[in-house]
Image (cartoon, rainbow, N blue to C red):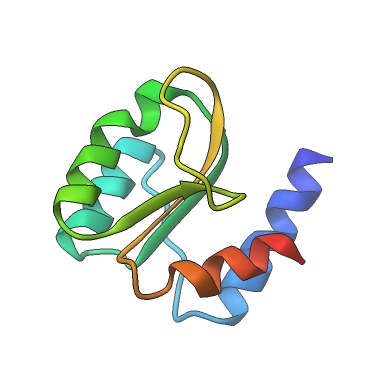
Amino acid sequence: QKAERTFKIVYDVFMRSQDIRRSGSAALDIAYVACGRLDGFFEMNLQPWDYAAGSLLLKEAGGCITNWQGENVNLLASDSVIATNGLIHKSLMELFRT
């Protein structure tokens, strides 16, 4: 179930973007969004240590990070995360609602 949902979302994002890159590290990918190397990042069921530091970097850089429901990420429990440069956040979130 999780794999099927993930593959569908990745396909939908891929069809609306130029490429998808994954380093294997949520912290690194969110830092890359903060410095402008990536426009966005998403992942299902991350632990807080995977995104807490990147969340601070991204917010300080003017980006946006929420859970998949558009709420602040939970720094005390597992959460699904969308991190963007802020410009594509709404568009990326819409893909998760369909």
